[in-house]
Amino acid sequence: EIDILPEVWLPNDRAQVIAHVDTSHAVTLLPRAVPARQGLCTTRDAAERYDIHAMADLSTKRVATLLDTDSDGKGEIWIGAEGWNSTRVEQVRAKSFGYDATMTLIEADEPVAMAGVDVAVALGEPIVFFCYEPHHMFALHDLVMLDEPGHDPTKWVIRAPDDDPDWLKNSTAATAWPVSFIHMAHRTGLADEAPEVTALLARMDLGSDTIEAMTYALIVERADPDDFAAGWIAAHPDRVKSWLGK
Image (tube, rainbow, N blue to C red; front, side):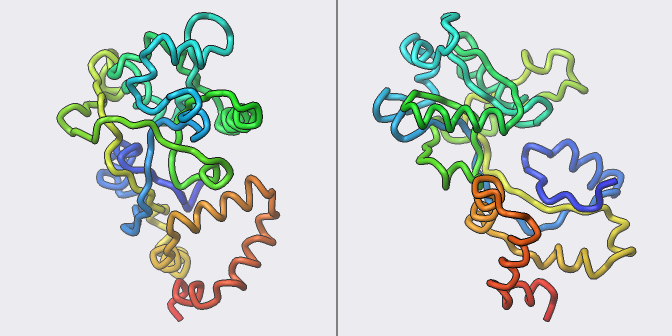
């Protein structure tokens, strides 16, 4: 069983929060949150060299041809991993913006997709893919999010497959994502079993820059997790003491 979940994305995981936090109370969601962004990205080089700047560009034959790597007449866009709530939302957004007709929506594990971004950058080829921040890819590459209309809750209706068999048809999201946040959560019973641990989690303050630097060190630089943690703690003694309530 999992005692601590370090990433609960809202609004992505709203249904799970309602079920496990608000209804069953099996999980405690910590109120401290890290601001996040979600959308579709390209590299700055591709945006400028190939004139790919907005979501609306994805519906054009020109951009579909640029992103067509298998010569089937449609471009390819990675929209997330299978099972992610955000992947389902990106399916809705593709339908709502209309680029589901010009693009093949790829669902694949994130490491595979990020390797594809690395290759595209190395070769100077255009690429568009689902992205979120904080993420180490923003430190590794010069990425930009595509322009799109600001979030409009009246145009953001996301149905869940469990509630509506025709969820894709009956959903719409022709705007940007709403403001997003990352929370930590833990099994509610952990507060009685290990109160010092849950108190530490409640005090822990990790900003976007810190998370991005940590993931960059672990994923890109392949730092040993234990060595990195020990070094980071040694370099930030006052911050860690405040988390421990000292």
